[in-house]
Image (cartoon, rainbow, N blue to C red):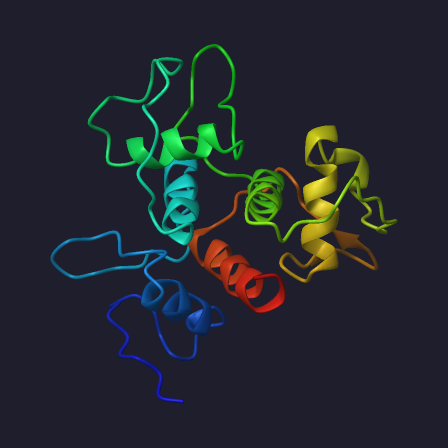
Length: 194
């Protein structure tokens, strides 16, 4: 069909993630990062505040519950406040401990996988019960215990592909997820899960 116009000055139709970025934008999941000349900043790392906001939009931006007093680092008028309140109430994230949400923290690949699995479960599209599949990631031991299920599920559904190392497949769990990579995950999540 007709591709919508590309509003972003830093995204080119030949870019690897072009379709993913336009998909995330036209579905209202991700917006630009600049005000005057809209930029998508595809290589910019995704923050935790940005990712919960994307999932909140995906859920239709429902009226959120009250923001828990739990987080000392989420101001009441923060642009991501509703999204954080929704995410905590719905079990997408519990924060990072010590009364902190760490909104500016960079989302790692294993965190992104975990958030997406929890969202899938929230909307009734996740696996029932525990899943264990054997994946031959050379760096499997580097995946945190709490993230293993999300990593396996995202790999199984093609939402996250491994990175090839020399003769090996790597998950790169602690690697930063960029905005373009998150857009690609969301696109595949829509296509393969929802």
